[in-house]
Image (tube, rainbow, N blue to C red):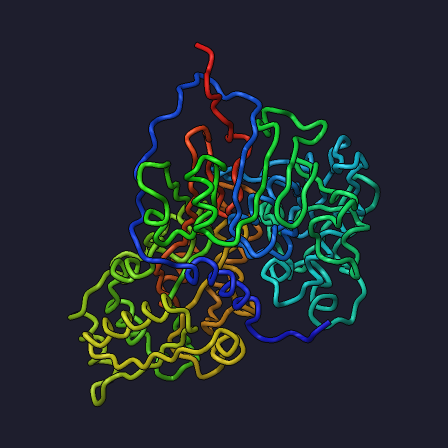
Length: 548
């Protein structure tokens, strides 16, 4: 396996965010509502959910999908189960393929018990060996994969996924057919929440061997993909598929009887089919979604995603070593104005998605624009010469526009900023190096926990700590939260750690990504988790002629 390259995990997140920002188009975010669907007193079971997916290929392999791709997340939720599940607003993960799990007192050993009735779509049982193989396959993707990087606490990850000196991931084992044990090198009580992410889908061991190809549509007359989710593949090819509710699945957990997936070459083609009544759902780029959808045809729904954008400030850069300069940068920025440039996003007041426990801490006055206060700090820090900084970004037009807006705002406070825009590959391989100063910083929290944002990016020895923060107090706060079993106490500790990081002024929160979906009138209860997967238990289809 390839040797580790610094900061590749962070850049996997940045690459995923290209799907959110890079697909931007101009226009309003609102769409004219369709007439209200027929009122039905209770959710009903049955019907066919029709989905158009603007994609280069039908996304069937969740381990390889970008974590901000709502279309891929939808397919993953339909076809692939994970050990655990999450519900928006809940403080703890819930059982899925695992009916229960135990956590050691030091939060380093997790024992998952599989449901005895768990089955793949071909009727074969889901075994512990399948789970170990599936998670090992994700780890084997190595540092370029954000999902793989989040398994770095599993014992033996470095030897297996980074150095290539081990043939197996030592921390994964299957003592028997229904028991999976995960051992960690450091405490991380949020592991069960992480394993609910679509990338950690469970597939048969035979299909996820190291030399097995990526999961794709079957060849002509070939066998259907073997999957573990609430729906199974009935028919289809690279252009579309028909899925039916899998045997043994509770209809209340997956109310539509069938799901039809149709790949389209473009967003416009998908919206045209939706406007013509041919499909019920279309994942859209959030920017300009209201303009993309014809007025009066239906509704565009926006859901928060776990992808965030920050401005990073490198503590190892001499020009930013003085805290007053960093504080001045934060005070000089007009963050609401920057969000307007980042169409389709929402404002962000912390370094954690506000929807997760511990995410309610906000930056407050230090992140509220105050140019005179910034000027005072800069005069104190550099009385003899103006402060000059570089701002590194990749060459996406929207990101460059945001960077130029930042530079103009900072100039008003007396900071000279040179924007350096590079092709993404060059940004990935060279920008996040020792000489970086200010830089565009995108992060995707794969789990709905504060730790998914704070621990990988601000712990002293974390590979994705690109801001150069080395702070014993922050490390102690992060470690305490990661080892605390009680969820209420843990949320408070994550909040404490979050406040400490904000106080260091090493990253300025800018925006949170949103997913947009064109939703037809019959679709009820559609909502997304932060990982872009829909909550299937809430989704149902109103009949054309409901009974009175």
